[in-house]
Each structure stands twice: as structure tokens, then as C-alpha cells.
Length: 277
Image (cartoon, rainbow, N blue to C red; front, side, top):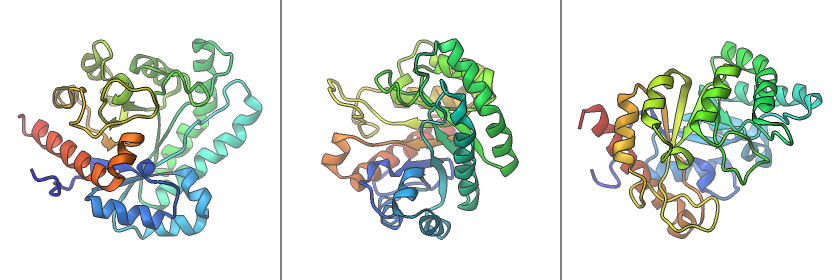
């Protein structure tokens, strides 16, 4: 497959995090140039440029919107903040519905001094009304892993952590291979929990790295994506596959050519796995 030829599929998307802060219309034009089948946009980008006007742009986007990103769901140590945080999440879920997306993803939010067990209990309590209300809107809210250095964003660092929290809270999972690709028994764990995974994020890694984030274009690094994607597909995952590229390597190449190459490579791997190659 040529790098500019991408087999369109509603199961493949890419994130606007590759681009600098700017109006969403510019992101959409860049996505179209890169040949991205569907897109994801962060909530804060809408806030920066004007919520209502940017939502109107997304509603008319020629590139379908797959999801909205709303990081750091809850301040888990402070229940007094949960009502406002629930309201914010449901606002994003309503916006997702309005622009034709059926997914919102983000991180759990900081646990502060809570243990993993206490943070899990707090998250389950905080999230319960949101999970139910979002489902009524036809929108799935899911949570992803974070790097341990980003304690202000979340407290789940492995897929195993996510499974425990998903079981407790009923909230589905965003499986980010950037942090989990070398996790022990990952494919087997996916097979046991495929129905919990709403989306999966794909990137690559080139060692050594001394910065974060430092994503690489799929196919450029050491992550065995062909085997992983084939194994995860065989394990039963059928959710959205998102190409998440950001960091100095992407900035140096340019977001559009990096996305074009990355999405083409992942589309090729998805076509191969579904064909049984």
C-alpha cells in the first residue's frame, strides 16, 4: 500500500494532539490532507477557541468525528468537586453526541495520597452516575492508562490496573499500547476482557528517549505492532483503533506527513489482520 492510499474504515482514527493549539477548522483541513478516516479532538481545544463556534465547525466536518478527549475526570481525594466534574464530563458527552461521535475518553484524574484500592473505590463512586447518563445519550466514556510521572492525570499505569478499575466502576477501557505493549500476557488479558475495551491507541517507540511524550510513527520503532494487532484482533477486540502521535519526533517531521505515514501503516496492518494474514 502506498503511503498516500488509505483504505477508509470507521474503525480507524487519529488525534488532533499532533497539532499546535489553533482553530479546529485548521485541524480538520490537515486531517483531510493526511487522509485520516476519522478524527479525535480534545475538549480544551474547543474551550480555547470558543465552545459553541467550534462545535458548529465539528458538526459540519467533512472528516467524521470519532471521539472527544476530556482528560483527568475526577479529583478523587475531594468528593466535593465530583458534582462539577460529573457535569463537565456529561457536557463533553453531549457534545460528542451532537457532532456524531459515540466515544469520550480521558484519564481517571489524580488519586492524591489515596492508595490504589481507595482510589478505585472513589472512582467507582464518582463515575457511576456519569457512566449511566452517558449511555442514555448513546455515548461511551472510557479511561486510559497514564505514565507514572503524570500523577496529576491518573492512577492506572497498566492494563491490569485498568481491568480492576473497570470491574469496579463499570467504565470501559481505552487500551494505550504506548504504555502497555510489553505488559506480560497482554493478548491473553485482552482475550479475557475484550468486551471492556472501547478503543485502542497505537504509536511506536524508538529508544533511547529522555522526554515525554515521545511517540514515534507506527513502523519506525521497536513495538511489534504487526503481531500485537493481529493477536489483539484474534483475542476479540473490535473497537476503535486510534493513531496517537505527539512529541518531538512528530514535530520534527511535521504532523501531516507523520499522520499520513502512521495512519497508512496502521490501516495496512488492520487490513492484514482482518484478512487473516
